Image 1 (cartoon, one colour):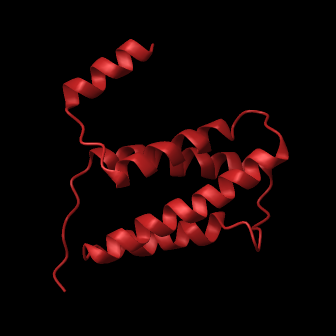
Image 2 (spheres, helix red, strand yellow):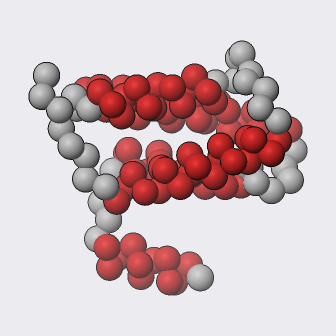
Amino acid sequence: MTFIITVYIKNLQMNLNLNNAIKVVLAVLFFLCLTEMPYGFYQFVRFAGLIGFAILAYQANQQGRQTEMIIYGGLALLFQPFFKVALGRQMWNIVDVIVGLGLIISIFLKPKSQDK
């Protein structure tokens, strides 16, 4: 399985910069949330999501991509661990899948720069 993934990544010649690495790590963490894990893991995912999405929002702002900045900022607020959003396990699973898939898809999309 890992061989297939490695070959697939090499064939696409993906440039794993910091943004893409953050997106991959967050997506993996969100998909792992679909399994039964200890509560501490979910708290870790919330901290990682806050930090990761904050970095992505900052970098999107620096590159003039305001729409992405707003999306990542909103996701940072959703996943922040201080004032928890109580959605229930089933709804969080849906959110985790949608956000994880969105992150993976965003790696392969070319960003459109917005003029300031």
